[in-house]
Structures are given as C-alpha cells and as structure tokens.
Amino acid sequence: MIAIQGPPLDAAALLADFGAQAAGAGAIASFTGLVRRENDGATVSDLELDHHPRLTEKAVAAIGADARARFGLIDVAIVHRHGRLLPGEAIVFVAAAAPHRRAAFDAVDYVMDRLKTEAPFWKRERRSDGAFWLEARDSDHAARRRWEA
Amino acid sequence: MRILFFGRLRDVAPVGPVPADVRDTGALRAWLGGRCPELLDPSIRVVVNDEIIPGDRPLDNDDEVAFLPAMSGG
Image (tube, rainbow over all chains, first blue to last red; front, side, top):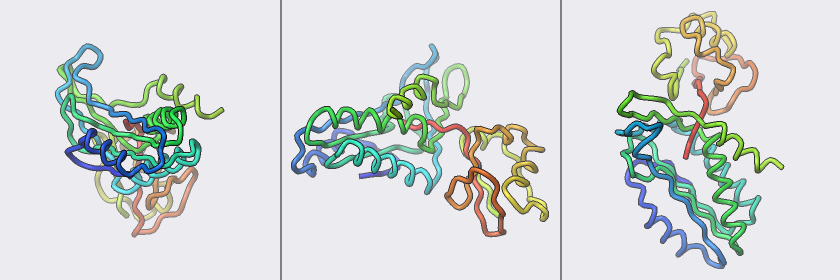
C-alpha cells in the first residue's frame, strides 16, 4: 500500500491491516514518524507538509518497489501525510513483511533513509522562534549513502 | 504555460506572465532567476510534466513546469 494522504494517519490500524494481509510472512517490521514537540530548543506549534500532487506519489511508489526487490519482501506499505500537522501526530508509517526479520528491519530503515533525502516533500515548522523550512541534514544524506555499497 | 513552485520557493517566487520569447527551461530559469536569484541555485530541480529534466528542454504553451527545492520527507 502506497498512499499520500490527509488526516488521520492511524498507524495502529494500518499495522493491523498490513499484518492481516501479509500471508506467509515470518517477520513484520514497522516505523512511525511523529511531529516533534521541540526542535533546536524551541517549541513547535505545527508543521506544514507541502508535496507535488503526482510526482510525490510516483517517487514514493518507486522507493517501495525498490525496497521490495532489494530485500525480497512479501509486502511493503508506505503511508505519508501531507497538509498541516500538530505535534505528536504521525507523519509517516512504513511497514515491511519478509520471510525473516533482518530483511524486514533493513527494508524499513532503507525506505526511511530514501524518504528523508529523495521524496518530494517540503516541511515548514512553525515554532516559538519563527517559521523554518526544514531540509535533509548531513546525517540523513550519510544514512542514505550506507545503501549505495 | 503553467509554473509551480514548492516548499520555500512558494514564499519567494515571482509572479506575472512569462515573455513570449522564453521557449525552453534554461531561458525560463534565467528569466525567473533575474527576478528571484534563489531560483538559480543548482540544487533546485526542474520538472516538466512530472518528469525531472536534468538539462535543457523546449517548452510549449501547454507544458507544466515545476521548481523543486531540496526535499525532505519522513
């Protein structure tokens, strides 16, 4: 399942559905990313997530397909929010079903590293000290490069 | 021609009709960059009709051109 959607993103319900459909899996790993309450010592009031109406879905689907092939997954889910989000709300849900645990763990990690650096999303954080567009950090790019070997 | 800006470019992008002699992505970028130097940043990707264009490409009136700054999902 690949989806770019508005609210709500209910990670627990998505994981339950994903598990029910992942016939034959020996392992399911999942990750849920949340809007942080504080960043750089400032209080976050909300996050605006801009995206491209068609390109974003295409790019996310390609990342899912790459993960499926690379790790021999039985299934993969990537559900990403757009629009305005409040602290504590889920931004992204990723799940991978595989015959064994290592592939499931690695696939989720891989998908997140690619989403952080390549997926056409743009985040503006509104905080107690102003509004800021966030970009991938050096550590995000370094994490992405781990998969190039 | 439809021109879209995303992320931080939405805040700074110029508006107004594109001159008739702007007929490719390079000329469009140069024309827009004259009004908003931020658009000349080489890290900004140019997308025509949902395809990332690494070099230069001719433009028609019914093309949609999007300018994408550095991305960050997740």
